[in-house]
Image 1 (cartoon, one colour):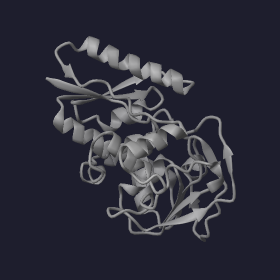
Image 2 (tube, rainbow, N blue to C red):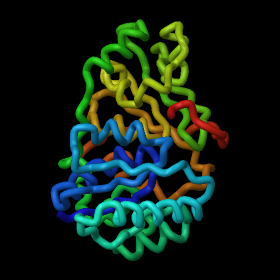
Image 3 (cartoon, helix red, strand yellow):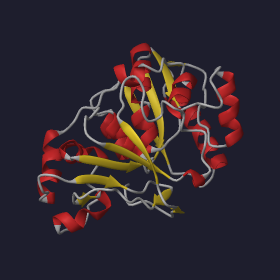
Length: 279
């Protein structure tokens, strides 16, 4: 039996984008151990709940990049030690946070440093063709969970779905729409009860997203989840270029040959956040 320990970036959006890569690796290896932090575990477990060959392996959320490295290295050693019957590939930590590492990896993979989208870079780092992002992507949806959340909101027939914050930033977005705005962060305004983040997943919102007449989102896991749906409705991606994060938004980041129709909008500002309501 052969195995591999996969260690890529650990945001929820990363797990959505790299779903195709992970499933592709699961076709080559008998066991795929997917490293994650405990703060992401319930979402990662849900994504792969129907595939016994892909095993999420969680560690406590780190407080620094160095701590992340140490915990990921330790995870590989633990997995190898506890599974002596499995022949594992040598550990390859493909987790990058520093700007010089972005530049180094872009150059190492022969990509254009001036026009690169991080999903393509991350697929190159996993040695998986980029098209697998779309052709191998699979998310087994739960219609009952989606229906329960949809019905709890008592939504109008037409609305704009808006997400104006991610884990790191909140953005000042001003959608030019006459439609009522449905923002997951304001769940209680529509449902009349508090949002139960312990019991609710981002994937439970898929029906709400599909029924929307417009979509306005910032650069977060919600954006990458929406891209998997390939919806033919007005779609707006909001960003503030003053965040200083430039190694992510190549020309194909919004629109590639598999999914498009996104219009780029500029937010009027952003604010660094402490904590995030979506767990």
